[in-house]
Picture 1: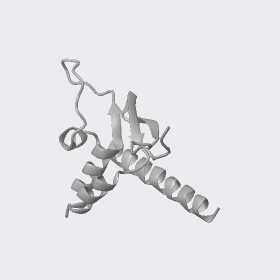
Picture 2: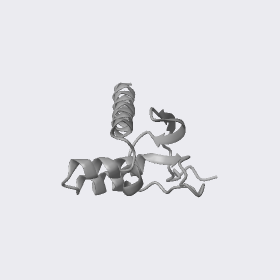
Picture 3: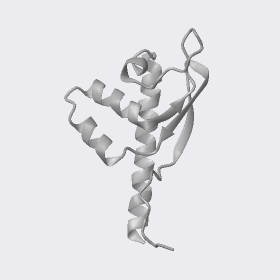
Picture 4: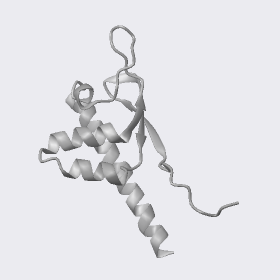
Length: 110
């Protein structure tokens, strides 16, 4: 049996509901992957960078269109959310990432 590490997505998720959509269910990744961070950093507009970050951090959601078809997680669809829900998501992801960085610092000290 090989003791070589398997490179796979090891991030955990957190489930949230949006204030304007009480039946919503959104699974958020804890952190961006390396290539995703680079893509976000290349954007000049903060709002566009925020939407791309959300797109990368949302693993899945339960939003559907009027025909009951699942809506893909895109910047365009994210842009259709009310501002208070976007603010909620931005606040949540910053909190999740901040907590993850605290854990890394604690583990590094050990």
